[in-house]
Length: 171
Image 1 (cartoon, rainbow, N blue to C red):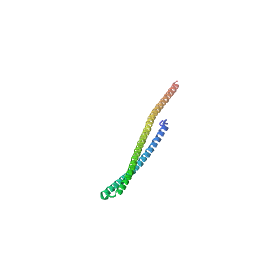
Image 2: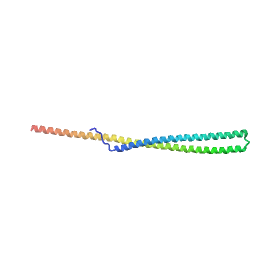
Image 3: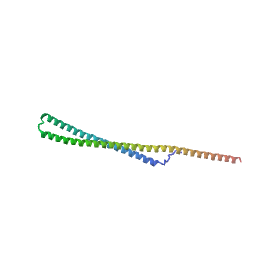
Image 4: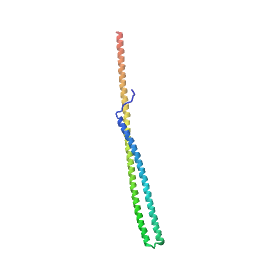
């Protein structure tokens, strides 16, 4: 008998396979979220760099004004006040970059966790598959032994029948 065997943990195996599929989907989602967070970081860095460049340009403008015709203290004061505003804006942009870097790190950690969970689920499926293979080998051995025993029994019965038939013919 070489027909299919009903594995008792077949439903468990299917559930574990479904969990692997869900874990793979989660990994894809986490990768996508990480990509979006990285794009946001690049945008925040771009905004910060623009603010930094603007600050440097205004600082150079103040220096040039002072070097050439810095006789008007009101104009110098006005430029310094504006520079303070630009400096504050730069600090805000720097904070956004730092916050976004934290978001990227969190997204990376979430992706790593999802990958680890997927790896663990794959390991669980592999364990059950290995168990199934061993179980099937064991069941086939038992079936072969049972069939061999049945064949021996049939052989004995046939032998005894022939022996009895020959005894009846001889008597």
